[in-house]
Image (cartoon, rainbow, N blue to C red; front, side, top):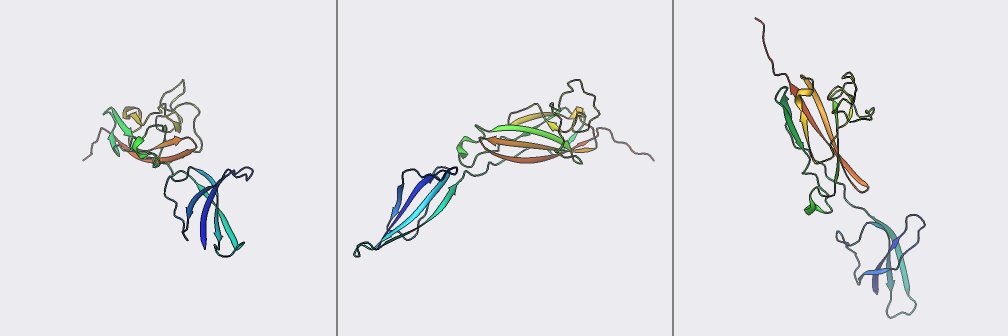
Length: 200
């Protein structure tokens, strides 16, 4: 018996097949190594033929969808800071695409968001929240202008601790995007007061 493995790229919209290619001949099992097939939907067929019996043929088939791996998002930075000490840096340069790990963060778009620990990202301001844009500081969030995006799109961001309210915990989120894939990572920062005293 001769076994042949074939595949054809299929359209998810109309089910049409492209020209088939032979993946393997003679093996009962087919192993597809990473990156052998580009992302897409494939029709895979196992064709069996008895070489001594004319017309003794049969086949079975299935579909295989090949997708790219999820992006990996990471944030490095201090978890505590004292108000009045200036700025800290949050660093997402360790984020990467597992499909192209040697490129590191190249080709990745970064979006930074910030909120207080007891808030969520469901109701965000339309303007960047790290500048006033004429708004009063009464909306909560990290800088008093509400929950939302920072005005930074790079892999690192400088945070001015002096503009934040002390004795609060803040949550920073980075969204990493590449084409139609995205992933997120969170970082928690506690801002402590620079003044401490006791009463006896």
